[in-house]
Length: 219
Image 1 (cartoon, rainbow, N blue to C red):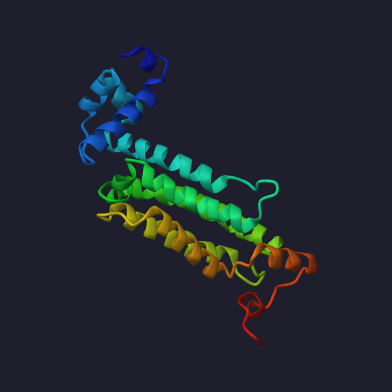
Image 2: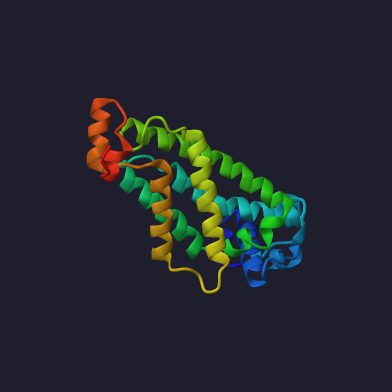
């Protein structure tokens, strides 16, 4: 055991070791190998997680934590709704593109029942927060008020989730920049998002703006 490991709880050490083993072995893992990598006994591994499936579930749960942080990030003073949400979309894509565990979560491990349950729980929370973000955009005039936020976020987040998952598994992967551009174009279109200046005007009036004005078309 290294000095750095000694300062970390045994459960965290095991989760980190399991993630490393899963990445190194294309989604396969053995409790003994994980315990050895963590510098612990296999008995401690079973004590914390009960089974190999329980340990894998804990690794996947840890993977989704930062994604929830991205989803839960609140407004920043002086930043309009569209800019904030485009940045959120970019951060979401960056996380999947940069994390070496992502291909396993959306690929091989994504078919495991325990993993599906964990993903569903995190997705449900992100959908709830996403719906609140859309309502905030409606309050700011950035999104038409007649759009159903709960329905819209299901389309938006569900589509983004599938697109990013497919991109991560593709060989070669699509350009990150291009994927962000396409994803944000989809979000804007799905939510009928308005430019900041037009959205601010709508918020002041407290009424929706005709989509034909937003697009430049004549009535």
